[in-house]
Length: 550
Image (cartoon, rainbow, N blue to C red; front, side):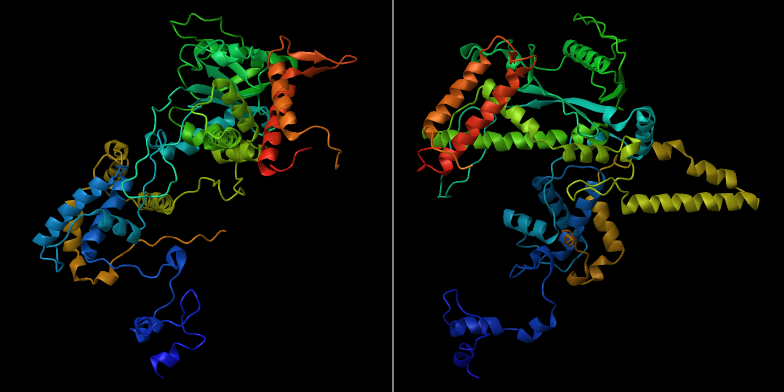
């Protein structure tokens, strides 16, 4: 069959508009068809890619990938410049070893670096702060110690508290625009005003207590301009010069919490980190000059070991991260609503607006999220063995290397017992070697992986005798988981009145409004409901701009 007739077949590839391919394009499709049909179809995350470019320097990239694995094991941060520098060193070593690879035109360009990362599934991950400063082999014993302390309390009486910094007016550092040649985006000075949010939750998620917000001013300007009564805010607002939870505020929090538990006749355990501003009431700091420390009769403080909050604290296991993600979403939504209403985005939001966004974001943290994070921390008997969680939260399971080491240790102990029973000589020397404190105490990450040694060992083992296809290449793992009402007022009037009602409620000097009888209505709950009503009305007006009445 001629190519012109082949192009008219139904199964022949066609152009996007449905027309037959050109003769030259069909020729390109048919080149090497015998070899193509012998190969299996591509699979995994790269299955839809048309072609993967092979490396011109397979041995160099092989040793460079080995060094990156060693650097990861040694907890060495590897940047793009470090990869380029090590690639040049490997090139020099391979030239001395007379490797059959053309290095005359080799350049550590951005294109080569990106293709190397794609071929070996290498990408950038953020280094977390305290997680690398702890010996993870001690975590099981520390978890068991915490379980013993919390065993006498029921799950609903297990509480965790922690503070977190929040730059409430942080603007995005990038923007999605049409990419024209030479285009640059101009921005202003970054706002770095930070406040502190203080979170308290229990293990069952049934008591997510009102969030604390700590600022610098006793009455910020938005409070004075709108005559706000801080007691009517949906958060507990406190202040000091540093906007931190200092020891004085810590003692005030403990006194208030202990009084609430005493009134309700509950005894709780409060898990907290060993921050210097969280001292025991019985041992305040030497230079402390604040209010007298409280006497805790219904609250038992349980301190976490140093540098273990990233592993053992439920709030750090995802609760605070979920709160901040919700805040970013609501911050973006506020910007969009303001832009659509006034035709421009606000340059900043004030602390009063941020407080309502914070309260709404804290309400968005679900009970299931709190329960899952307590299970992930695994510091109570009730969370032990509970790995049936969502796919986003995984329990700590031993890695294959840790499993292998534990098996080998067990086998060595059995072998020593057998040798001791048979009276083998030199058994004391063997025990001294295995129990060498200097060898055991030396950290595994106290060395920087030597790339020259990696190349020398590989050449000595005959790696250069292999073909480029037989070299080990890390492949990305594929994921196995997987009343209708009569019209009353216009929408704009309703939006305006809801906002004015919110302002009126904020200025009330009382915190509760009396009702007929003995009941009263919380002003704070009214303000929160009015704020949500105002947001809903604003969104409705944006979705249905032609609707004039509700």
